[in-house]
Length: 293
Image 1 (cartoon, rainbow, N blue to C red):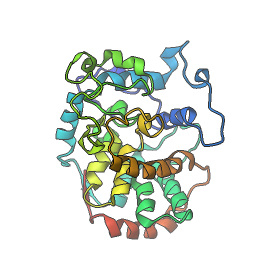
Image 2: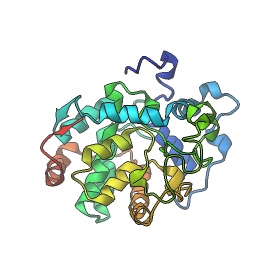
Image 3: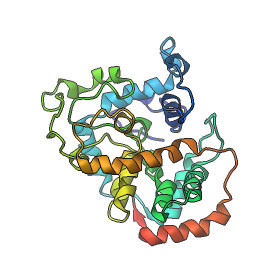
């Protein structure tokens, strides 16, 4: 994996794998009924050199600025890197097989199929099933040379004050936006309750896939895709002051989706060849024959 020239080599792999972030999320937000983990169980403050999640967020919070997001959108939203059918894109994503995930040894495609199959088993609409299947497809950013901290991680608004409810808020001390009077107030460049449609989020796979699919999927699906990593809001309610009533209505779908994303891992692999015809048909109902990335 390559990374932009402005970042040093030591910043290339803060996580052992891009899925390690999701393992950390599970510890911070355990499934309903499970006891929360103590901080010392998952944040190694005594030996930060070995705490790769902590290092990941140091880089994420340092570099995710308002200008950085604008630059990434101007670059990647040209969609001029690849064009292929969605199933092929999922197989392309599969080159990110995670050999170090302690919870599961399934590849990306199998994990996404497990998520989608759990949604289907509960009788949700077909667009909801499709959303479960493709929701991580934006991680192909890693295959286009993006650093991990610009692909995964908890997401948050840029262009306004960073909430102390965001994981590891102390690392925003190195973000230049906190010294910029345009961006360091409660509302920053936004207006009270302006609606998230007017708010720029930190750059990563959520935002990227939203822009790929925004002309094709129902609005609840787009909210699931765009905000499923926005834990500071859908778990901590840290940005109520930017949301409007429509956002609050749509976030019920985000909350409904999140357990399938986090808690559907199982060591039993889905049989891909048996499921492929169903998902290819499902894709064809909503998405074009090929997508540009």
